[in-house]
Length: 569
Image (cartoon, one colour):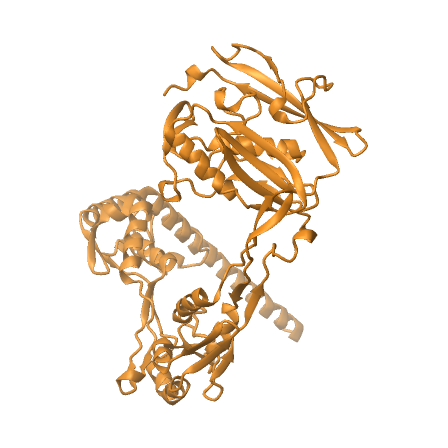
């Protein structure tokens, strides 16, 4: 036989052998697939239960028995035992078997059915119950690490540090669910230890430095006087913490620590700074003014204000060294807006407008509240361009601010409350602002017509915090408010510099029969009885004229009053 023929024969034998191997392989693979199509291979477990060589029905029956046994037990979690049903709502045994068999059949390897696998049962956890258990454990275990302390008053003793602890909620939930899926009788939380940022060994190295910066007092000087921080005070503040403390980056990874430290408790220093600021700070007080015989008179001098820069002092104390023990405080001087020297520049030169109302027939408590409320506005200054809020200036309306109970309109009834009658004050201020021609930004009518506020429609109700009376001082100068009582009349006087416009008031848009002050207006009354007995609508118009007596704006004020019958008292 020739050499070529021998080579060809050898190749054919090799190909035949390989083909035979593949045929046998696929034959065995096919036999395995057929035999284990609906049957588990060896070493196969579901929820820790051996289901080897069992078909789906047999496996599910075996799991059912295991589940009933597991279901009637208690699960040990931490130091507590919980009924299984507190943690698992239900188990889908059929789905558990199907998924395990599907994973086995996906192994396209010869003898794949003999490799074995461990599978978890398909459980539905009681999320509410599990969350409550985890939250309770978190609250029981969670502790913050405690830094070491240096106590110089006790022979330089060092109070040892203590580690903290924390429950990792997500990891704990995953651990528990995994163990439940394996029908384990016990499971555990995932917890970590939190080291102190300042350890006892850290403290040992800093004792001498702490003693050096607390052994002598700090002297403080300022334009408001001299003060001192004693050595005992400094030692009481001593609380050493790293500038860059140890920080948890991951579960068990610690960031590097800085060798720079704060030596004092910021909280304690701030408490002391608040006490110091009471001694130094002073609110600037405007000069008290009155308008007498056509001129402005000063009845009380202004006072300068002061404010301590607490942030600056805190920083300097925290960074104090052992050498420099004297600090000059940064104190800002606050000038009052109105002084006895700047009255002319403020434009307080003449009577701008007056508003009045009559409280005749008011009961005793109402009169008291009107007088008390009006006093809050006497001497008040309104800045140029300021939106003046009546409620803000009025302040709290309570017994401790001097008010008595009297009737107020509240929602759907008239009831006694502290400050009843203050709408007499707001309505009078409203009239002075109207007569000055100031823009009215917020104004609310009363719910029903009140005789104290005639002419109707020229009233303004207030109640903290809303509704409010708000108007703008557009005169370009300061306005000084003065209030006074003449008989049963409450009067608001606005002093300053008259704006370059004036106002007239009419019940008609065309200005027929216009009055020079709003108290003399004859408003249009209509819709009588439209909202019940005694109800009506009142409308008047404010016509604004420039300094050449040309009409430049018309403001409309409409008040829709309900029937008093709707607000019993």
